[in-house]
Length: 217
Image (cartoon, rainbow, N blue to C red; front, side, top):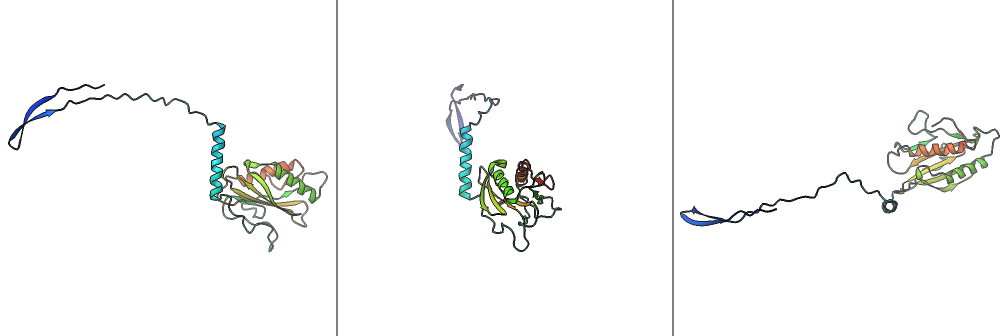
């Protein structure tokens, strides 16, 4: 709402001269802002929006190649037979580490550890492959990249940005029913225990078939 003020004329002396000065009407304006309702609940995100956002993140991951490059040192080491040690980062577990290394060590498995009737390495290998293909710990998608009579390498890819973890399993010769393994992320310094949780999930499923671990890590 506006209220006009009446015009007035008065004399003002400036530098020895007299002149008439007119004051223009002044307008007072009152603005009314609509009341904001901060208590209104936000609209829920639809499933379509979630899918679209996930797709956008997946495209970003493809552009920036978050998957990383496969390390050259993977596989059974030749100088001292065994899987590779972990880097200093906290995103890897391996049976090759020292038991005193609580950050990286994980105990090996025994595929006849809880069986009444032992099975062969070939049968145990098929059980391992079956579990790998059927489980998606933390929604990471497994893909078997390499398979030998005593060795398996799997790539686990994250559902959003396409980060890749390398997981290896090895059946050492001359060691009855023992399976060693290594699970490591290609990128980053931390994994929020994803690699250790993955190994635990696989081991728990294998325990239903008669496998066992030296410890309950």
